[in-house]
Length: 636
Image (tube, rainbow, N blue to C red):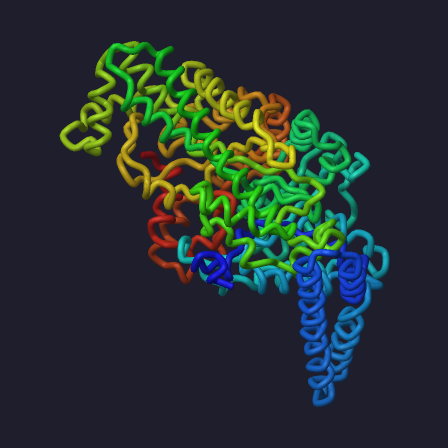
């Protein structure tokens, strides 16, 4: 009822970024989910909850009908098929679909097929950014039900289907919008090595299929066998640039220290990019963000020329703290209003709107429930509450500390050129930024040549560490309306598109130009190599953040061209993690091929790059995104 929400139309809203608990439908089957929803409806006293549970029944009855249509179509094709082998295949498809339209799977074939139909239903409901979770764990239950070669072939087919979203076009990247993530490895829920035979089958299948999607998030734990990392490294050094590596020991300990139960933490997975979440148990995306560059610009414009660097740091921290406080307070208002409404108290929301503390435009989740998605989350059916209305057993949310490196480099440039060398006044730099350095190219070059992040330089790194850790600590001071945590995450996606809206900045960057991915070096500023970039990032206390972190680096493919290239890469990852590194997203490419692909895209259709948390075929990207990626190798 659009009128009910003041004319706001949020009926097509979804924030997506969910990672459903696909194990629920594999364990229960579609009929099991339907019966569970019907049983819960009988126990509810609030009519809106009863109606919501009926919507789950209707949605899953619809999914069963969809699967039955595939079954009938396969049988029809089989009748007219003259090739006996293909006829048997079609009848098998019909049998599998007919069975899983209602019942839990009995073998790997049926499990993979039901998993895929379930995912398609979530795409219909959400359109994009619905992630697969720990596929080598929940499908491993069925691993021994079929011969290994058949499991391998089905896994390859599954990966091909995961690339089916290529024709879903996103207006931002100009390429497909599906962009989904699988998680491999790590430890089991009870803390044991999780790398199994199916993990290796997935790795082999990824090598054989070699698509840019799904993104592959690899948890690397000290309990994992060394060959696991080395097999993944082989994919990376040969240009399969859709793989990210995570320090599993570190992320687990950080989340446990924050107060999340260890058994839950052991089972973490990812949504899009590198955001940690809990499949079917929690929805951590997201309660707000603080822009570490814009808060710095505010300090620069408000402070007098005679301030000290310590004064600047103090004002910078105040701006960061105020931004975090304001963002979380607004989020908490929205969550509180949605919780009241979902519990049947509509008057609370109306009163908040009348008092000017809330607006109906924030209530889109109430207008666009997600019954298919919610049924694959623990407690949604049991409580009669949509996943977007806060029903998860793990109620924590992620908070993004963003746009860091431009802020870090700007802080270093101001420290060097204003506060120490006194080459410029603070007001002069501020005015030059406002004017996009027009007529001030000399100043811009001096600022640009000040020390930069990702070179293992304490002059830059220690103030950066201080500010980032301060921001993370501020986030962790707050609680959600139900007392859960706001978890700190270090993240910056969309280097080209985020840069479009950012004014000129004091490190010498011009208005509208790209910004770096998370803790990655700004283009043209990494002068001491990858190990120095890792050393800078590792100075940040890993116990300060829980939700995400990323260092993305570009490598020339010739570096790993020898036969031991994968071992060299794997050893580099191990050493980075040993000094406190959290996560790495590599791109291994031949720059000459990138340039050639711009001129002759038809010859380089298989060239894969990772832009931030998402990957793509290079030739499918807009020219400005291609140019930004090449500039990562060639400088500012």
